[in-house]
Amino acid sequence: MARVTAAAQIIFLIFANVSFAQPMNLHPNQPYAAIPANPPPCSGDAMHCQIKQLVEDQGNCFVKEARSKRISKVDLETAAYAVVSSCIEPTQRLKAFQAGHDIRNVQQMQQYWAETDRKDLEDVKGLIALIRTGN
Image 1 (cartoon, helix red, strand yellow):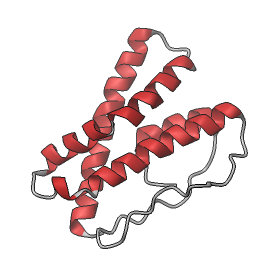
Image 2 (cartoon, helix red, strand yellow):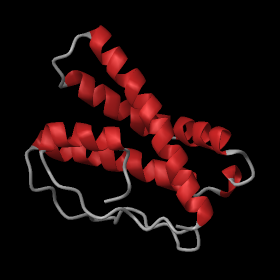
Image 3 (cartoon, helix red, strand yellow):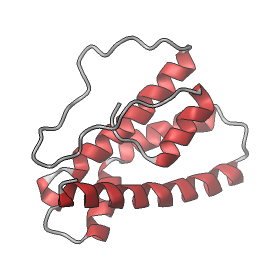
Image 4 (spheres, helix red, strand yellow):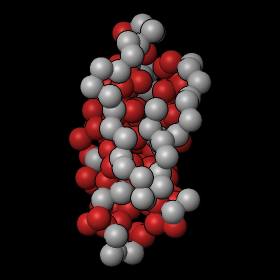
């Protein structure tokens, strides 16, 4: 499983109660490992499988965009915003799925996602820093 944000992991655990595999190797000199064309079948129920895939999609997007050469010459803050905005599609799919399966009201969901977006940005900054330093 690719590196995913802490917020996405929490969402995943809420819906699936599953442990995570080791994060993807983020070393900049190693090639990006894409999701296999035929991943192993999901062993949980349909909702578990769907949220797992959405979380993986968001995490994979963050890693792919963070490794992009186009952000290598900008400061960390700008690079993090570029990565997060490049991954808006998988993030919005995850939000839409969760909104349809969560019991919180609209205001609570807005507060939750504002905090989650802030945490995602911080996680992406850490991811970019790790990649840039080669750790």
